Length: 173
Image 1 (cartoon, rainbow, N blue to C red):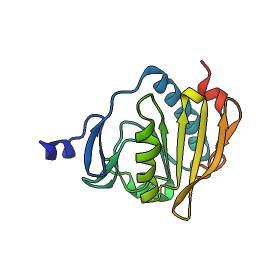
Image 2: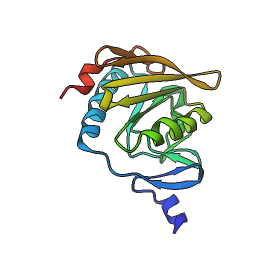
Image 3: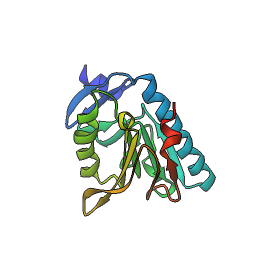
């Protein structure tokens, strides 16, 4: 049965450090924020013609059977496009997790460690309950803060050159 799941992953199943983990589907607030952020990123990426952006559920396979995740949003630069296959097989240039109640530890601790291990250049942590976005980048194999805004302000991306996101546009009700 496990082999079938690995070959036909049509749900929200992730493999985290060799263990299958099934997360709940996101709430409407999470999806509203994801759509807004994705739309802003998509427009910039298309206008600048710099790469490809995807949203969950789409598997990112770092190591088959060991780490297979579904970030909420991910970006791949044109020069890294070879990893775009049936799923994403390799390291995206940016991943984004929108933190839902009950997902904080998984997204901010466990998945962060996985993204750091495989050297994902940029990791966005979106905290709806705090109306905050933190953008982390790899520096000497560890994540450091690149940009942060809470309640108001703009966050910037290093991986998506020129992208600026006003967080009020992301979190407005």
